[in-house]
Image (spheres, rainbow, N blue to C red):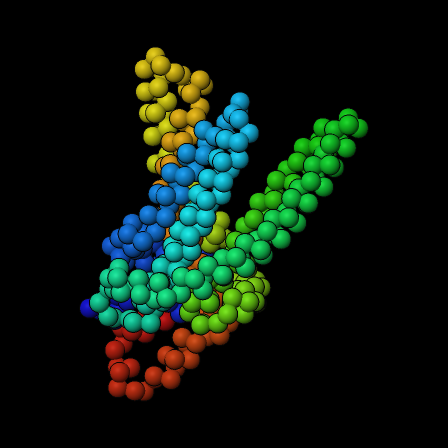
Length: 329
């Protein structure tokens, strides 16, 4: 059993850096349960999806019969279905693990199959949540593409009039606006899964709650955006350190074998890239999921102050005598 001083305080105001720090502390302390759960109940979906996706690449390659292209397109859709189911399983499992640790402070760390029970129970419910999330994200992405298209049209107009400066400015504004909308979409909508899990509410109320918490204060907005931005960079760094060395080794082997070169055998290169990407993605996606969950507690505490009210209510009681419990506060 963990010492009370060493327990993770969930309901606490934190900036983006502190949120990421507590995120990786949560991962470290629950590493076995988290990784085994992903390997046992999430990765199988991704393995099937990646095999189907890789097998569809040959059929969709150029100079193939139309019937084979259609068959490969169906295989790709089936692959996307399995990858989507894996994503739902990952979201549900990570959320239930965080919820358990939050609601059972000081108790022994949970096992995989203990978290599997609520994961299995709420899997189909979160599948419906993912459909709603995709619809909301699609609307934001549509507006992003429209804004990007308008900036590009402005850049083309500037270029046609002989002003390279205007073309460059419009192109940069288009890229920045696109990245901003993507970051805002993730920051405003992704926490709705964890809110629905913790507050036991329907997905539409959770989505509204996610937006309201993010926009309640300027600190909440900055923290949400910075948390997801930093999590994105961390994902990119980790994935690059794994994928790039393997692809370089693969390219050198193909080049030195004499059978094909890196340029003449691109299908193998792409297959390896997809395979590695899909297999490591569940572990990388867990980082922003946990980070957004921790940021939810921070935003909730900043607005609702539930943890503060609870600590105030315990002042003067016998269990309040442990001075170390309040040293940091």
